[in-house]
Image (cartoon, rainbow, N blue to C red):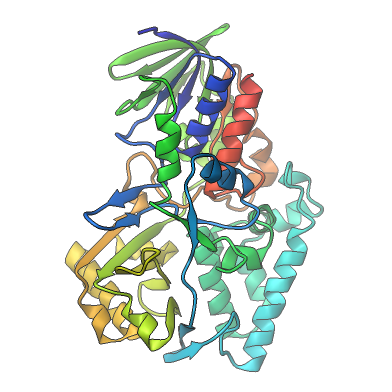
Length: 446
């Protein structure tokens, strides 16, 4: 087997798979190195006897054209996320069920919330997606957190709490961890705030039949044998003139170009020689990952639907902030998924499994009734504890990062190129963004 390649790609998530595919199409010799024993990266479909669970990235929606192209090309289908019936809101100690998009808040809080959402969408329109640091008033927005902006925008706690839950559901980070400029950039990158929050017409509109990893598996299966090497974490990248050496525990390959298609914080853990320029390294130090647990309860049937509930619940108490009906397309099982996000997720990580299970199921019971307390299966997953991810959904920019170092995010260094959803201008943080970043990096190399 040749140890000399045109290109080596690091990371077999959607970014790395896409880059590899484009390079192979162009007739290049490619080696794809993956630290895990599977493809998909932050997208992981766990198969059970007669159902599956998407433990990572799950949904696709309008304008995510790149992932839809792949879905179609590989003959995979999608189905709508279940949202018929009423949603559930637990706020200020009271439980309410409601229809439509607008939660039953006191009018002043509702107006305040609506105003903030519209203002955020309007502000985000001014962002320069290619160069966020060149956005008008970039320094002003990058000097404040999303929390600071929220505090200025909304005087009602109920409005602020609901906006905070929405923000944590979008970024898996507390609003005080996110630069306002990053929040604006991300909002425009995914169209607008309504699109990011909604099921119908939004980023959560559809699911991929067979699981979100099925496209990744088909892509990988289309490659020549031995293209992908699993269980192969990269320890070092050595650039010497036109040659690049990529080294791991039991391999040492050389190539002309490298594409690093992993989150910036993980890219920062590789040993580079010569060392990377200071600005690039500083940038990788400044992009922490979000924090999220996905918690699943599997039942014989989606019993909440009998009560006219769609499985969408939002709560300002307990660990679980938001739930979604993740049942199979045919409703043959009831699958409830809860997100534990941001600071709640950090606290949740300190609990032993039985206490986590107890906490989640007692909330599910509050949302959907006593049947929710006794599932056939409970399973949860913390992406922050995954060695080769260290958090999800994506890296977030804190204050100051975009304006001081943002321009080094995609800039190649010698023969090293960067991919991953964090580097995407469109649908940053999503599967679609990962695919776009892989296409861009492959084009740079070609």
